[in-house]
Amino acid sequence: MTLSLESLLERFLRNYTSPFTVNDLLHLMKTCGKKVDKDELTEFLQMDERVFALEGNLFITQAGAFTGMFFSFVPTQQELDQKVFVPGDRCMPFVDGEMLSCSLDFEYAGKILPKTTFETDCNTARDLFTFYGDEYASQYIGADPINADLNLANNAFELPPKLKLTAVSLERVMEDFDFQKGDRILCRVNNWDRGVIEIFPEIEHNKNPFIRAAEISEREKWCKKLEDALLLSFDKMGPCNSMEQQLGFAFYENRRELCSPECASIHEFLDKAQRVGMELFGVETRLWKKNEDVPAVGKWNMETLFHGTSDKDCFAPARFSGMPEYIIDCYIKDQLYEKKDDLDSLCEAMIPSSIQLTEKERSDFTLHIMRRNAIIRNKYNRFADFAMGSIRHDALSLYSRVGDLVYEVDCAGKEIAKFPQQELVTLSQLFAHITRMLEMLAGEKECADEEKTAIKLSLEGMEYNFEDIRTRLKAAVDRSLAKRFKVI
Image 1 (cartoon, rainbow, N blue to C red):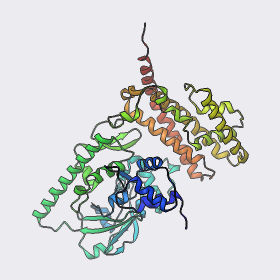
Image 2 (image 1 turned 180 degrees about the vertical axis):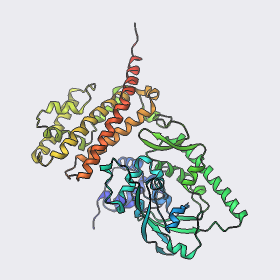
Image 3 (image 1 turned 90 degrees about the vertical axis):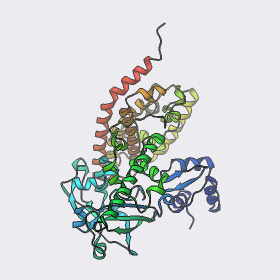
Image 4 (image 1 turned 180 degrees about the horizontal axis):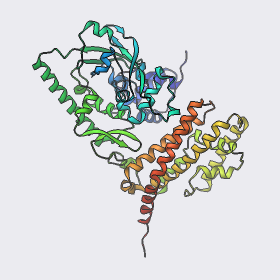
C-alpha cells in the first residue's frame, strides 16, 4: 500500500524514538518515493508540537522524548472507595495530547486494566482536568463517550452537579495489594502512539516512618526542581501554547531528574509550588510566575515579532497575500449567501482599509478571487447553506473587526511592549479562535444542531471579549500614532 506524504510523516512522528536531523528525514522520505523541500520540512518540524528541537540541528519526537519515562500520581479517597482512578490530566505531558485521556490503556502485570465508571460531582471532575485549564475542563469532560448524552452547548457549557467519567478499574491492584489513601501509582509510557502506559503500585502507608520521611523529602526536592525548570522555561520561551506544552519542555529538558521512579505528581507540585501558579492568560490559563500577569511580549519574542515599524513588517500583509484559502472561500460564500455579486466590495472586505496595495498586488489578488469565485459559485447551493450561512456571516464580521485591530496593533512596532498585555493576549487568542472557527465553517459538511448552538454561544462570548478589550487597545494605538508626529 502506498502512503501519502502526510501519512508517512504522521507515522514517523508517532513512532520514531531516536534523535534525527532534517537530512535523516529527507532521506527516509526519499526511500519511500516522496520528494520534500528541505526548508518546508524544517519549518514543519519547527511548528509541530509533537517535536522538540535539540542542539546541533537535531530533533526528537514526543514519542522518543517520553517513551520509557516515569511519572506518578496519588488516587483520591473517592476514587479508592469506587476502586478506580480517572486518568484526567495526570498523564500530561507524557502522552499524546490529542488522545482523550479516557482512551488511554493502562497495563498491570502484563494485562490491560478494564474501563469502568466513576461517579462524582462537577467540582471533583474539574479538579481531575486542572492542567487543561478551567476554561476547557468542561469540554474534555463532555468529550468522554460516557457523557455522550450530556448536552453542554444547550447549558452554556456548565456541568451538571453530578456526572460520570470513564475510569480505570483498580480491583486487580487491590486484590494484590492493601492499596490505601496516600499510596501511589507509578507509571511508565510503553507505547506513545497507542497510548499504552504500564503501572506499578507503590504501597507507602505501611513503610518505615524513617524511609517514608526520606521519600517525602526527595519528592519535595523533585517539586523544587520542576519549579526551577518551569521558571527557566518562562524566561527562555515565555508562555507556551498550553500548560501541557510548557510542562513538556520542562520535563524533557530535565528528564533525567524529573522522569525517574522517585517522581512526585504534577498535582502535588502545584500544591507545593511557591513561585509558580496558574495565572490568567487572556481568556485562557497558563502556568506562570505566581501572582504575576502573563505578558504577551517579552525577550523571548521581541526579536522575532518586530524587525521594524514599517507596514511591510506588520502582520497585515498576511490578511491578503498569505490568507488561508478557507478564509477566502468563506468570504465568497458569504457574498453568495447575501445574494451579492460585487467583486470590488468582496476584495475590500478582505483587506483593512488602511493598507495601501500596489497596482500589481491588487491586480494579482483580484485575479485570484475571481478564480475562486468562479469555482465556488458553480456549485454553491444557498438553500443547503441557509443555516450555516447566517453563522458564517456573523463569524466573518467578527473576523474582519478583530483582524483590523490586529493590523493596527501590529503596525505599532516595538511600542506594542507598552500596550496592555492581557488585552493583547486576548486579541491574539480571539484571532486564532475565530480563524479556526472559519476553517470549520468553510467545509461542506453540515453541522449538527448541537454544534451550531455551540458555535453561536462561542461567537457571542468572543464578541463580548472583543468589545471588552477593544477600547483600551484602540487608545494604546492612538497614543502610539501620536508619538510619531512632532509639532514644528
